[in-house]
Amino acid sequence: MTFANLPLFGVLGGLAALAALLFVLQRLRTRHIEVTVPTTLFWLAAARDAPVRVFWGRFRHWLAYLLILLICALLWLALAGPEAASRRAVDFHVLFLDGSAHTAKPADAERALSALKADLQSLPTDRREVIWGGAFNLKLLRAGEDALLLDQRLESLTPDAAPSALKDQLRLLSIPGAWPERLELVIYGRAPVDAETLAGLPGGIRVTRGVDYPAPQTGAGIVAFGIAPALSGDPLRVDALMTVRAPSPAATDVIVRLDDAPLAAARVKRLESEDGRAHFAVRDLPAAGGVLAASVVDAQGSALDNVARLRLPTRRVLPVALAPDVPVLIADVIAADAGMASSDPAAAAVVVRRAGSDFGAELPALELVPAATQTDAFVIGYSDQDAHAERVLRAGAEALGLDQIDAVGLASTLQRQVSVAVEPAVRRRVAVWEELFSAEYNLTDSRGFPVFVARALRYLAADPVWHSYVAAGKPLPTAVGGAPWLGRPEPAVDLLGAQFAPARAGELSGQAPALIAALLSEDVTSGRPGVELPAYTAPGGGAAQDIAAWLALLALALLVGEWVLHQRGLIP
Image (cartoon, rainbow, N blue to C red; front, side, top):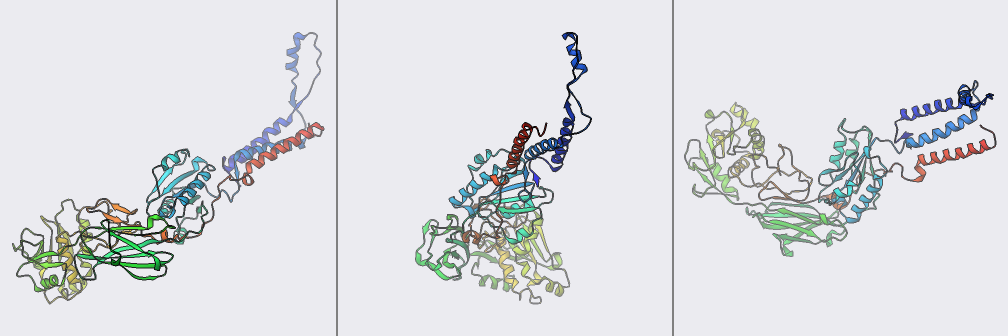
């Protein structure tokens, strides 16, 4: 048994004080003393000298004492707000209102909000708070705030086209010392919880579900949508691939639009259908920065997962000027890459030359430097004065494909450490030991050699990067089609070097042109419930569970019984 209004020591102390006070009052008795006075002038003095209530020498009437003590004790316990231990195993409640795509259907969202409001009334204001779980977790009601503020703060909120942020909220609740040790998180909505997350929670955190939903109807939705270099080999075109989940994949039709203009149905090729999924492809789309949108018609599922959009990359054939004295292997790599072409310096975007040459002096350059004049094997020169050297160095190896090179083998052959460094420069440059391009070393024979040359030239040309897909709640995949941006942080795609995951579907600010994220969530489309959670029971909800009311009724019944006993003369 626990108590909502008083701590246990307060309840026990109050019972002890009641017992002592009633014992003292029980010792008081009325004793009349007859005093004869010659005149009423002495009445006050006689009343003072012969008080009516005095202490009796011997304690009697134990039945009367125990009866009144029981009545007062019942009233005191009712005032303390008793709760069954199974109903009050926590000190604090966090009510989580799911505002993600999982609960985007109007009927589901309305049912969740109604249940939350009903349960909110039964919780003390200082021991509960309400969280909105959309793309981000927002605190709707703090502990101590009036529940009347809830409707006002919900006016501007609608379900987000995003997976649930419930896992992030559970991580916050797991921070040691930040929350009460015994805490219950109540989920209002369809947001799923996985077994791994539950297993990692501290023992004092209990997770329940405040709404009992029926099994979801399986609708259609786009669960994968991305792009890849065109199979045709055309460097200025890309292919789009998509996967649709539906109850009947064979009958699922996809409508594809490019810059709001519908594509002919014949261009949308069905690849295969299996395991409740249908796969489609659209070949040879122009890589000119357009917006590609796909949609499916579904009357049963959520409208948020029926549409997916992404921005196509802007690709070009990179003109490269080669100095006459550079190794022929570099010319072979450029000739083999359909996305690059040899050019004269006047029309080139980048140049390959030896150090000290004035060939294409005004262009970003891949320079071949004697190992005797440069300490590091690879030096990346960055022209953005606001860029952070450590950031450029951290991203440089992956950006230029240096992670594909056998640096250990080169160092063993050269008997010298192979390292990477960065430095500020007037314009972008990549300086490499010229000895590495000779047949004596294994660099030119490795698979990483053409990757390095291609990526280095695209980094120098500042080619715009693109990603194969952009999905809400999922980290951006490794950039393709260009070298990752190595300058100052972009707020939309880089956060202190950490993996960036778009919070919701839609355009991302901080990029020009803006990236566009799609929902692409198997959990949302399939309606996966996750781990089955126990149902939440609000404290004090129902007459059968209102212990305080029953205690008060019992005290009233005993009071009536005491009056009957007194009328019959059985107790004073």
